[in-house]
Structures are given as C-alpha cells and as structure tokens.
Length: 112
Image (cartoon, rainbow, N blue to C red):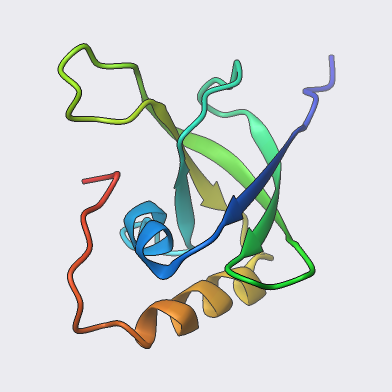
C-alpha cells in the first residue's frame, strides 16, 4: 500500500514567527508548524510555504520528524516538526537568508 503525501499550506508573515518556527538543528532544514491535522511521525508532507510578503509559495517536500502534543500547561504549542528533504536547498537558503538579516536579535522558539 502506497503512503499518501499530505499537503499543508502555511503563510509565515513575519521574521519573528519564522525565527521561532525554524529548526536549525535539522541539518537539511526544517520548520515547526503549529498544527497537527492528523499528521503522524514519518508522514510525507508537501509544504506549500509562503514567506513574509512573497507572492509565490515555496514547494517543500518534507517529513514529520517531531510531534508536540497539546499541553495543558500553556508553555508549548501543539504542532509538528517537518524536516525538509534533500532537494529543498532553495527553501532552506531562502529561510536562512531572511533570518541572517536579524541574526543579532533573539527570538523565542517553538522548538528546543
């Protein structure tokens, strides 16, 4: 049985949110997306990501590598960590370029 690829459309409107969602510990790049939508570990996801004011969304092949369950404490956000596939260099470079402009500013993170 073939595993079906899910699609997620996400718009990150500002650098603060992008910095909080980016997962730099994933060598090939990754993002935390604050929605579960029935996703499970290992699910393949086509992330259609629109960054800031860009008109065209980046098409990023990715895989769920981290799940953050809903917490009753209010200190963590429910969602998933997506690791980009190796062919997502364009997306990773674009994100890192946007974040480099604010490298001296500290942002809270959705991840570890």
